[in-house]
Image (cartoon, rainbow, N blue to C red):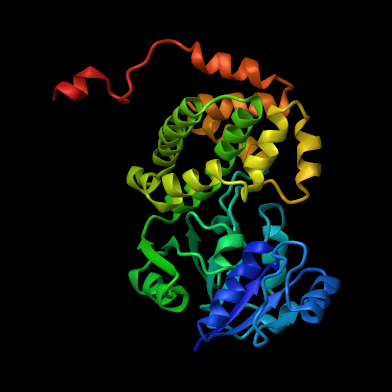
Length: 338
């Protein structure tokens, strides 16, 4: 049995708390707001995010960060915009050598840092790993078979997390590419927004398949330019997570995109979804990263124009379809002939 603390009581943090408690671990679930912690304790379920799903009685609830240590594994599950402040608070209590697993997805808007980089800056005494993949909280909390990937600097660390997290309904693979796993899980939220926009516009399966396929190329292109491995984007944290968020109504990013495609403004869409739409902030960061490292990301560029420059989705689609002719392979016919 492991002692596990989960920092963040949204849908994903709660789903993981439920799963780990059922694995037989001692779980502490931290909420930023005391009233949220009290509500979880009173009702035994996360009514706003996972209604009808019972949280095991063994889970402990707290809004005091000091209650989260000691822990064999600390899991961060806060929104990207809150990660740095949360990490600063954790820095006061996290001991040397603490294992921290980040399961949140996104990029820090101002610095363009990945969330593991934010954690490493604020918690230099800790060992940071990440987990990502196609995993809606609504399904994990209801024990629907799911697979994820854990990336860590050492195989020993990845295997340790694998042992704590895995069960008959939640399968974990390991990967040494922390940057690639994290970028895949973050960038797919932008594409899920785009997929929702296409659905809201009433476009077809052909269009969405094209979007998803070409977006993987863009994601890998940026990742490789930053030092990640191309093959990571063709795994669970890339194409796997992309498929689930572009096709499911569990995806808040896709739901927001549908509203935008139907004519609502990005601001109106986010208010109607009533949850953090990570793809919006990540789009701004991804656009800036592409500019910074000098890679072409036409889908991200058009998404940025729709979200932040007032371009109509119809014009964005036209711009993508009417671009100059290209070979599908990055290297063209010369590469194919060799």
